[in-house]
Length: 280
Ligand SMILES: CCC/C=C/C(=O)SCCNC(=O)CCNC(=O)[C@H](O)C(C)(C)COP(=O)([O-])OP(=O)([O-])OC[C@H]1O[C@@H](n2cnc3c(N)ncnc32)[C@H](O)[C@@H]1OP(=O)([O-])[O-]
Ligand SMILES: NC(=O)C1=CN([C@@H]2O[C@H](COP(=O)(O)OP(=O)(O)OC[C@H]3O[C@@H](n4cnc5c(N)ncnc54)[C@H](OP(=O)(O)O)[C@@H]3O)[C@@H](O)[C@H]2O)C=CC1
Image (cartoon, rainbow, N blue to C red):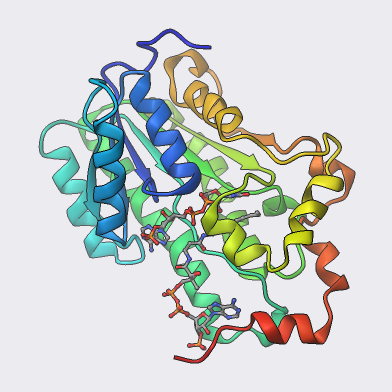
């Protein structure tokens, strides 16, 4: 779909790039010539992803940094290390945490677990990069992965909905504040794209995965390549006049019926009990 060198010469950080959609995006950026760095908490996962991907061909080497983005000092150290051999060009805020739960049963730690990753962590990484771009008068590009319920809200994923709404507000705020300095910020709002991380936590019964497909106007889930193509465009210079935008890629799901998880009102008390985390 794109010229092989669309992203040549760009240094890209994908948070949470060791798994799922982050990994798919990182692989596609690399195939188009980008020098990609992925980060996450599980270093074994990151190392294995890089090993598998780098063995495939001679595209630029993908590298990794272990980093828990909830920790502002760890973010500072990671960003310093990335800048040590030249500035970053693109940040993709993809790392997230989420689970389904009845909201009245959420503990304060459960709320913090999701807000800490999605809202605080994303802002730490974005501000750490933005400060360096501004100080170095270097153009920057931030792409954040949100969801359609960032603006519709959704039952049963309250902390995620609150946090993703915050990330969208950050995107629109900084697009205006940093635009004059050549820094663009955009977002992608995916509908359901099967990944191990999302499905383990959000689809407790197999038939609910089918519901995602049945209730979608296109009667299917998204394919990773469809999302990664969009991401490549948004981080490339070809989208140079797109700023502060959120692009939905959900087959028309949210227009059909807002609130991605509202249909879980069908779950019984027994269903909710069965998926509660076991106390450690
Ligand atoms: C498809 C649609 C959109 C998709 C969007 C996505 O983001 S997909 C991306 C999907 N990918 C990911 O999410 C990947 C990353 N996700 C993760 O690492 C974990 O799922 C995490 C978000 C819980 C954070 O882990 P952590 O190690 O920081 O946390 P911890 O284990 O120590 O628990 C802290 C507190 O949370 C509580 N709690 C936990 N689960 C549940 C639950 N089901 N119910 C209720 N509560 C729950 C737990 O009991 C504890 O509270 P307590 O008992 O002490 O008061
Ligand atoms: N799949 C879907 O249908 C949808 C996904 N999304 C969004 O897409 C993105 C990717 O999700 P998906 O690929 O499905 O899920 P994954 O669980 O595969 O991806 C989440 C990634 O984030 C990393 N991560 C989590 N917490 C932290 C942390 N504190 N510091 C650093 N990294 C962290 C995880 O690695 P580790 O645990 O090793 O830290 C993991 O690699 C997320 O933003 C999600 O909200 C939005 C709508 C729909």
